[in-house]
Length: 96
Image 1 (cartoon, rainbow, N blue to C red):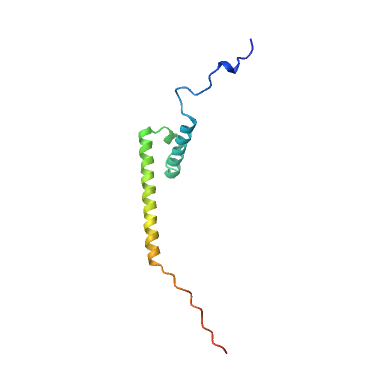
Image 2 (tube, rainbow, N blue to C red):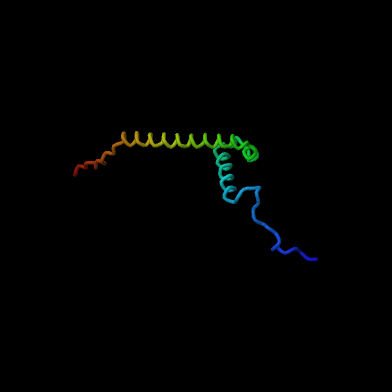
């Protein structure tokens, strides 16, 4: 009898499971939640969260990052208006 040949087996993805592109997206989102959670969650906690709650946290993190970037832009603009660089004055030396 021998080992079955690989020609008879369908190894393509079937109905269940994620495609490789979807797996990358999923794990990127899980990593982002872990990173921004600063140790508050474990991988298992995030992985087993219901999808709608996971999406809620991701949207909140996105809003916080957007607000932070807007605040930084406002801060940069306000500081750029306040600081006017004066030319450096050369000291005057007396000849002895």
